[in-house]
Length: 420
Ligand code: HEM
Image (cartoon, rainbow, N blue to C red):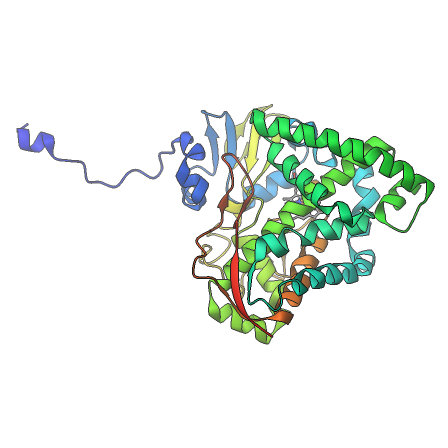
């Protein structure tokens, strides 16, 4: 071989089928995970990542199968991350025990019972919006989306609103602590101790003076204090940050396209589609973890008993065999089911639904409340904001806030508008 030939650089493109598992920890993945999801879907739909010893599931239909097969894909891996901070939550339970906990509240968050709470959502949204209506400029995430869900849940539970700042800090510290980093974990456990010390006298007082709020209802049903404390912290964490981030992502998607803003201003009835498409295109929760409770085969790959299985919701939502041009944010796409989200099914009227609220046994209990907050919140914003647009200095995009996080969102969302 001549020296010239031997030194010729290899110009062939890198083989995209070769996955480097350390990419899951890299800056590129943190900033934009979708290219890796696509390569996994295409080449390794069930991928054994030997570095972290996890199995990654990325195609829509396999995710549906795994979420629905709780016999093979159990919820044990939550217990350190979630239960260590919040106490034993329904997220890590199965069978009758899970059903019992879930049934205590699930009906309060849907249907007519939820309708009774809608005026609360509107009142809270209105009071927030009135704070910046005349200003022509707002940090939407700080002044609106991060406030609305916690204030609504606190009102539903009858928690004193003057302590909003405390609850906001606690739930943020709980969320940050649900991982393996020692410092955030320690902060979360301190927050937990403070929260417990606050809740003990609060619950004692409520027991002596029951009202119509959700806490009083749970006390009447005989739920003991430790379970109540865990439950309230689960609602604040599960329903606060997720809904905040979903609203932030929705507004970022919309504000990037003036045409979408104009259509929305002309017809608020489109909000259901805008929300559903956000939950498909940019869901705040990217994955849920499961543990294989036995050897199980998925998409031709054997997943062994005890394996940690990562169900990549956000990847399934961009599966090109299910959604046309999946990377495009298009609330008018004809292939997404945009009606009421479905716990059991994912396919209705020939259309597939997004997976943003999970599926099956642990399907989100707050799915209707979250949608209601996003829609009523948007109606109230549009009541005071004409021609909302991203401020020139808006740089933030949707990304994970910390390594290993499954939550993705825009940080600060700076919006300018003409006051109405
Ligand atoms: C857009 C906002 C929301 C998103 C993206 C979201 C996402 C999810 C997902 C993906 C799950 C499934 C967990 C799993 O399979 O392991 C879940 C479960 C859950 N969510 Fe949500 N959620 C949202 C809003 C809410 C709200 C508003 C509440 C309550 C106020 C709530 C309370 C819960 C609870 C308690 C569970 C556990 C259900 C069970 O284990 O049976 N979520 N959520």
